[in-house]
Amino acid sequence: MIPCKMKVRKSYDPFLEPLASVFLQAVPSYSARRSLFEHYVRTRAEEERKEKRAAQKAAIEGFKQLLEEASEDINHKTDYKTFKKKWGNDPRFEALDWKEREVLFNERILPLKKAAGEMAQAQHRAAASSFMSMLREKGNITSSSRWSRVGFIM
Image 1: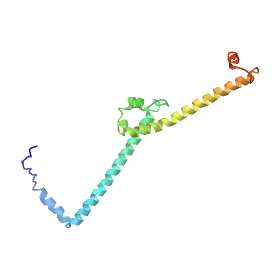
Image 2 (image 1 turned 180 degrees about the vertical axis):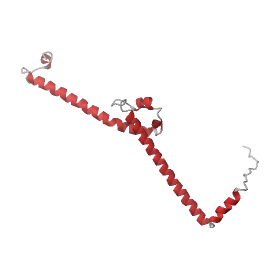
Image 3 (image 1 turned 120 degrees about the vertical axis):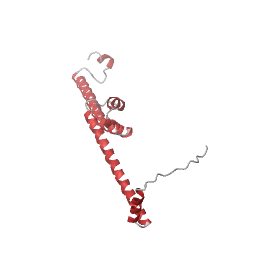
Image 4 (image 1 turned 60 degrees about the horizontal axis):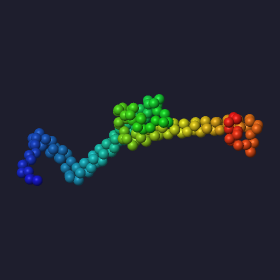
C-alpha cells in the first residue's frame, strides 16, 4: 500500500475560536474540566440506558398487545413459525429481538397447552370411568371372563 502524502487541512472557523476560548476560560483548571466532562459522560450514559430500557419496555408492551389482538388466531397447537407468518410484518412484532419474541410467545401459549392437556386428561378419565361403569352394569362379566368372548358382546 502506498502511503498518501496529502495534507489534511482542518477547517478553520474564525467564529468558533472565541467561543472555545470563552468555554475554556469558564472552567480554568484542567482537573475541573476533566471532572465536569466525566460527570457529563456518566449522566449521558445513564440517560441513554434509561432511554434504551424505556424503548425495550415499550416494545415488550407492544408485542404483548399484538398477542392479545391475535388471541383468536392463537390456540394450543399454534407454533412460533405459524404466528410469524401471519403477524411477522407488524411493526410491534419486528420491534423485539427474536429470542424475546419467542419467549413471550411461549409464555402466552403455555397456559393454553396446559388447559388443553388437562381437558384431554379429563376426557380420558371420563371415557375410562364410563367404560368401567358399563362393565359393572353387565352382570355376566367375571374375573375369569376373556376379552375375545366379551368384547364383541358389548
